[in-house]
Image 1 (cartoon, rainbow, N blue to C red):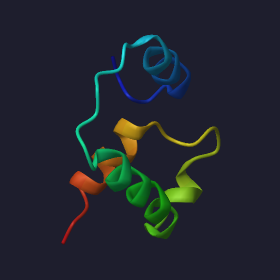
Image 2 (cartoon, rainbow, N blue to C red):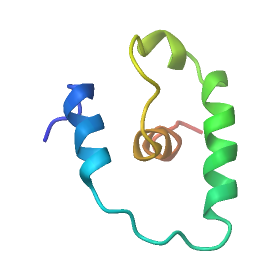
Image 3 (spheres, rainbow, N blue to C red):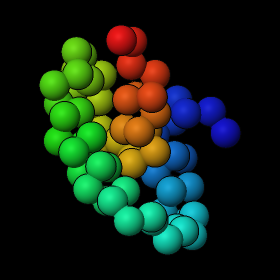
Image 4 (cartoon, rainbow, N blue to C red):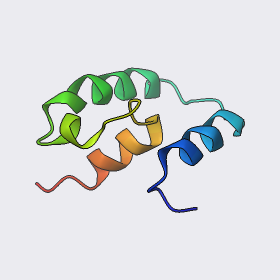
Length: 65
């Protein structure tokens, strides 16, 4: 599935079973979501709902240093 259609991505995320998260992962993800608004152009690129947890994590993984 391409990540261009957010409606399909959101539906896929809602229907996907979630695995147990390791200890500390919730805190790290919460920090990444809070910092998301500081990423250049992040909020301008999203006209619809906020990105999924996987999309936020991918943005941090691909962020240039």
